[in-house]
Image 1 (cartoon, helix red, strand yellow):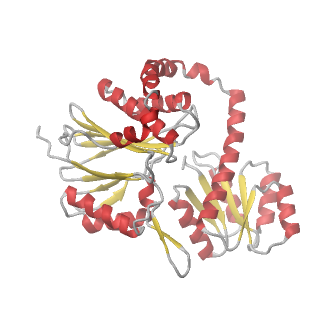
Image 2 (tube, rainbow, N blue to C red):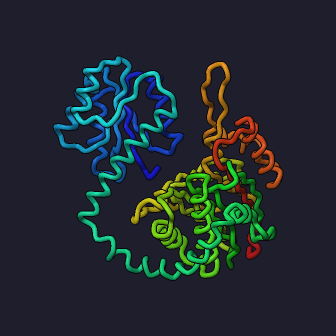
Image 3 (cartoon, rainbow, N blue to C red):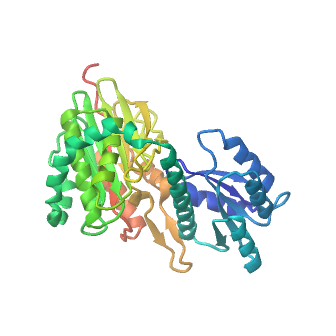
Length: 409
């Protein structure tokens, strides 16, 4: 989640672990402390790093230095950081005092995972807007983006033509998520299902002189606007496949186009994968998208590719994360949208939600990794749907590739 760093100050280990699991599953970087002194030390140590603490979630009752003392020290030190307080006491005077001190929100025990995620998202969004206003006073984005604007101008004709197709959005979207070709430089298999008639999940592949390029994207929402943004992505990928521009440049230009041509602000996550069969490497570029999975054919090891990057469609300045990995014949790479790992079922007696998560997906991949690619994706998809009792809560997309042999060897 845009490299957001959250510090949890909580002396109850089970509560600390529970919050860490919820937030890490959402993609946040999480650090933990058992008291206020530990929390202050972590905050100071991270100030001059590339991952300072953005949000503090603290309990009030802690040994050595409690939550109230911790917040006061942060204010006295003029450290600007978002703050959420955990309280189970229902003390009205305490809450009023916390608000006066500058506390942004609070969590009353007991709380549900959804409540935690919503509070965190709201507080981070508020601070993000404050930072953006400060940046506007000191930055001259126009000068830095002249070259980028010129590139975007080349695509405006295409975008204008695409706008005429909005009345046929459902037909268009269904056409977008079906590959018309089945014979690419690399073997593929995929499953995709929109939550409603219109969806925001998108994928595509184009062959290159040395392999293939693949994009998987997820537009927030399941309405006409989501479908419209998906069409923009397709338009740009089609243009990219003809010009074969730099991958990083493509996502940067796409971000600018989403901001300028979108009907409304809409978050878009994306991962771009370039497979070079000649040199046997995979190049990943991520814009806030869920981590890819790679399965080694040599030792059957399964691991996530740890890249994040900024979400597209929100800010003019976007930072992308990338990684280049060596690959071997028979290796598999799994790309997906967050509807997969966020799928869940509800336990009837308790009403508790059980999310599949990254760990659950990895376990299913391990279960079927020895099957042929098509069967592997089919069984993986069926188990995911069964896990959520065939009641999906979001668009879902699962895309698998298998590295072929290097014919130049």
